[in-house]
Length: 314
Image 1 (cartoon, rainbow, N blue to C red):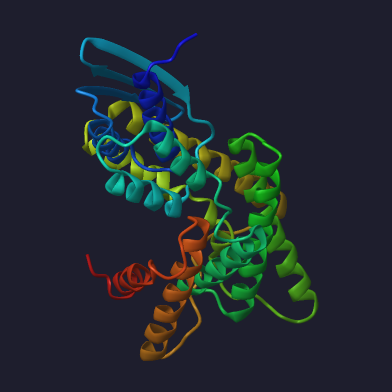
Image 2 (spheres, rainbow, N blue to C red):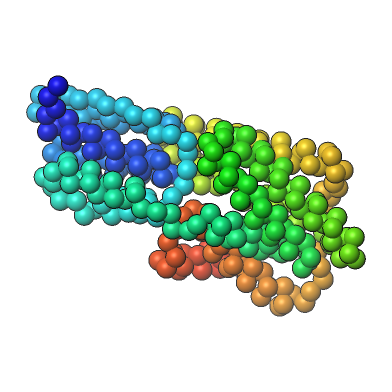
């Protein structure tokens, strides 16, 4: 079978779009970048249909129309890869050979993760501890939440590496993280370390499971009239939340946990403000690792987000 240059070009274009969506980019931004690359590949028009798990592109060059479609795979988030793909779209020259673009895409897709699984687990632990303090936990509860969060993230990584269903993995991870917190609290209580404001640390141990990226992305897509992609992203995020709630409910029912609001430790207001600022900074910076964000260029954004959290800026 003979493949024309147009076939190679549309294959490169499809591969670019799939890589964008697979890295977690929104449908609206992916649509814009596909159009930019399509123009540089000399296509006269392009039509794009997207959902959470598939991408279909129809292009026209002269009198030839070509339609291609590909499945995307399980949702994921890799912000560094999104940045690399956007940079590729910006820098690729008009009239570039599809083979050159395909080679650059292969290089981007073959790059190893920025952080190891153990580093991400440790970062989740730090973030969980920071969130626990912000929610009103004392030092002992902070430590328990950090250990439980790191344990849950390590277990989730293990499940996803073995290609477990993402909803089942979310439920089992929530059960593992919250169960680990309850066990650690019991052990600490046996050695005379009582956890004040138990619910704050308990909830913080599973906050890393909240699918903020797809939920915000789905809302953004809806605002940009990408209804199919937006609704499917929101449905995915809602299902993850329901799975997490299921895992939490099992632990709450078995351990008989009381989640009623409890007073936080009493500290001077200036000290509380300083400690919350530090906790927000540490938790935000650690949580960036989960999104596979590179180390240096995102720190100004992290600082800005932490300042908004502490001072309530909009």
